[in-house]
Length: 241
Ligand code: ADP
Image 1: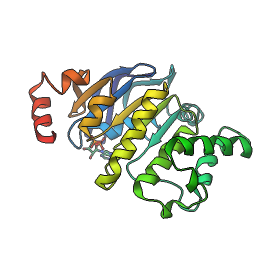
Image 2: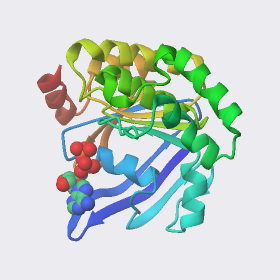
Image 3: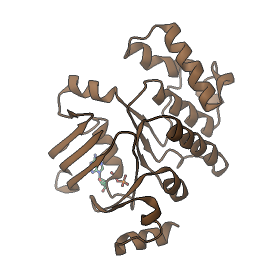
């Protein structure tokens, strides 16, 4: 579903990703871990076409991401992203947030988009909030709406960028439980950046450890968390676990 082939990303003289190659299979859940500044968010931004590679190629569902705006829009449509800071449209209700892209981008009728919104709010447990504005919701509720909004586009790929980092500790578990539920009940391919190692361990099929713009270890979580091979991974896990 996702292929990075010899990808380099530099900003001026700073090489952020260097000769990076990896693949993610359909329906696979892959988690990226590693120190701050190692290039994890840059990978998600490249996939969302918010930035472009300086060398190498990226393909999503067989389509190469080029600088071409029309092509980018087609690929982006297949990818949902959830951010650390929710990024809901503050001037719209929850319903408005959920029906905006399906009507405008996918061309669904208002009724179709509304039915989809209600179904997704049932999934995330917030149906009664459909006519509220985001500012009236807790951080955890806003994040669950943001997840519902990403799913409303029926994406093939879901990108999760530290989606619990901005939440109060008591709200984290509810969002992670929702993601586990989505992981178990859909075949969406999920690429996730997180500092929640417990979640990474039971949600991922594979964990990739990044350092200095390279994958230094790529293994199933049960191996990576219990018997990491690379000294750098051992050191990182000792600091965060
Ligand atoms: P991570 O998500 O692992 O913390 P990032 O992908 O955010 O890492 O950043 C990787 C490196 O790229 C950092 O050193 C960061 O300063 C640099 N970087 C990211 N975006 C830009 C940019 N627009 N201009 C210059 N440097 C950037």
